[in-house]
Image 1 (cartoon, one colour):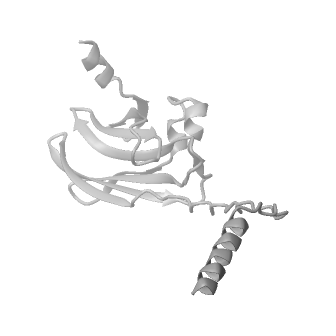
Image 2 (cartoon, rainbow, N blue to C red):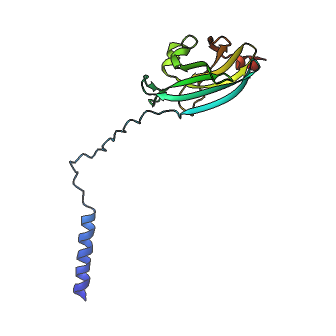
Length: 181
């Protein structure tokens, strides 16, 4: 039994000495491999088709509005590097007898007279809707702005269509006037 305790004591001492010994430094260099993120595919805004019946000059007109992403236009890159397609929006106004009174496809460039070139480069044509009618014109509200759906950065615009088929475009300042009052 004495031999057993002696062997056990020797084994414990050997274990204690080996546990306290200095580890040899490794000459291996371990570095994390950087994984490059694949660039995200360009984002398209959802297609949009809408028809409105409007009373104008005592008659019922139909306004059809259709938005589509236009892959032939230069892509828009926002401040975070995300890429977006710009849009084209077609507005068609049909008379009560079914004939077409007005038919135009709008692009962002149609609004370059009222929006700065710097803003145009980072913006997309977002939408066009019927705003109101009066005796001589049909007024559409349009917006050009950041294509990110979470952004509220846009410029409100008005497209005025005369009863002769002429259009004029201006910034919509009505919201600014309401805030000042």
